[in-house]
Amino acid sequence: METRKTEILVGVFVAVTIVALVFLALRVASNTDITRGSTYTLSASFDNIGGLKVRSPVKIGGVTVGRVTRIYLEGEYYEPVVEMQISTAYDQLPETSTVSVLTSGLLGEQYLGVEPGFIDDGIMMLQDGDRFMNSNSAMVLEELIGQFLFSQGDN
Amino acid sequence: MDVLANLGRSSLNIFRGMGAALIMLLQAIIGKPQPRKSFPLFVRQMYVVGVQSLLIILISGLFIGMVLGLQGYTILVDFGAEQALGPMVALSLLRELGPVVTALLFAGRAGSALTAEIGLMRATEQLSSLEMMAVDPLRRVVAPRFWAGFISMPMLALIFTAVGILGGYFVGVQWLGVDDGAFWSVMQSAVDWRDDVMNGVIKSLVFAFVVTWIALYKGYTAEPTSAGISKATTSTVVTGSLAVLGLDFVLTAIMFS
Image (tube, rainbow over all chains, first blue to last red):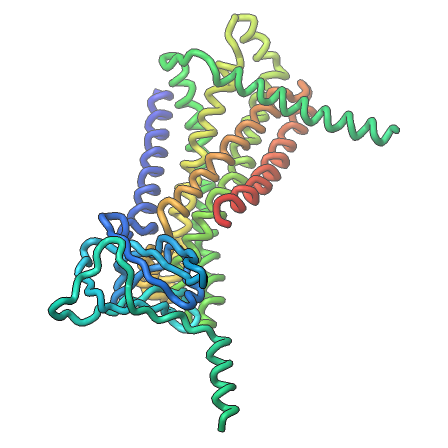
């Protein structure tokens, strides 16, 4: 009887652990990452990417559709280029779309905001490996202050 | 010259001890597995080491989560960022407090008991009598205790973390009035399965290995006197806790920097 009781209590211990693991997996951690399904890769070049990082979200109208996968400098002028993976559920972005480096909230993290462009005859959809033609760089606080002071000096 | 000799002697002793501990562990766990004979011993030790530590883990997990919720709320509410309470509680428990506090409690609750038990077996010459009966005490006594500690401590750490997050939820949401949906959804967007949950599990596996190993070695090599056993038990808790805290810094630096 003694061993049977021990076995039952060890079984309860294992069951409680499994419950804890399932709780952590389903309730605490995110398992609905948008880039877990099939994705396609787009890139964009900027003058300045600010505080953007690998794994920063890519959003259309506030909805996360992908993630930044790679950031590097390109060409003789060292232009920053950002590569992103976007879920194939959103593969109808026209080539007139604009991508900007934005900040969530006043002090929040930086993300890429995609603004879908107009669709017209002769406008192609962006394919895997394409590059956005229109991009807006990150706002850098020091540059804004500098421009403000400069414009004050003119008056 | 004497200073140099003392330094040399003490470092040689430290390395000799580490080598002897490694040999003891390898002799205990390497060998032909005998599931029929060793599984009941293992279940018995899972009960002693794991199930009997469950209560202290549940209670301290709950209270640490509740304190995190309370402290985090009073700081975050000043910035109007009380929605960030969820990720704060979850990340600090998953990454640090869960594995570390569980390992410290485990060293105190189960590690000291293992050392005292094996030390007393040595003092009363039970280990020698096993050898006389051609039973290897390393396989029979040390191995099931090692596996039980190595497996049950990460399980205890998972339970600790889950209960702690629930404690933070009770204080933050039910008592202080953080929004229920925001608490969980901001937490989910901040916590990553592989980066946070799995790294926490890896941490607790490392701690479990080190703490159980230290406890068994200190017991196995305890002086066979009552003073020797008391010294070995103290040394298990002190060395185990220091090893956990030191390794935690190294692992955090590797995983999260």
